[in-house]
Image (cartoon, rainbow, N blue to C red; front, side, top):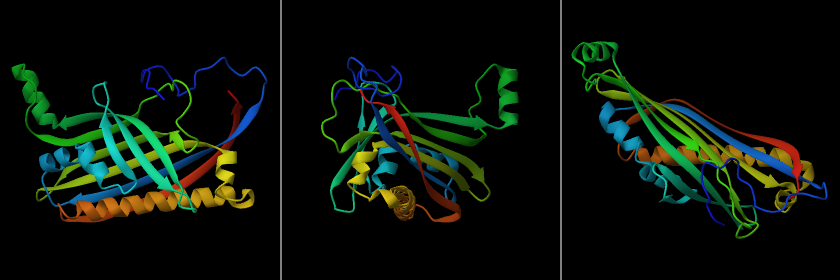
Length: 238
């Protein structure tokens, strides 16, 4: 498997194309996690903490490593989960991180009058994790390794008494061939068990990450929700 370029479109396998017209059943598994947490720390400290991608993902029990790539601000996440028979399933995500800070209207207006950039009165900020499409060269290393898509957004806002509100939304998406999933779950319960497993995994990850964050900050959970969704479709067999 080789990363050709993250800017070549959707992940595909190189080859001569599908001449037989055969289709394969694909199940798209999506996990979503949302939550709001109020941390008892200043904005700058919290923003720096959450923008440290390797630190934050080290709190995720499914993440085995975060690697830099040859492209600036683009990372490779290596995840591993186990099926009910304790066999490993490896998931790879390519993600770009982007950071944005917002200043108060007063600060921006003052800067416009002096031809300087606003340097103070930062009131909020966003950290985005964006999926980076890749093209796969040749075959995957085995039938238990998959490239997924990951998306995240963390909105941080100053609160009173040197506290910071963090609003987090995460989404992961993996396409599995149905015959592979049938090795894990019988077809009559495949959809409901896959959705339940994803929902449970997202909730467990959220709890574990909060547990680790609590070692560095006092916090209170405002809202927390996780869910899983399954969609089945057909695509050309390459």
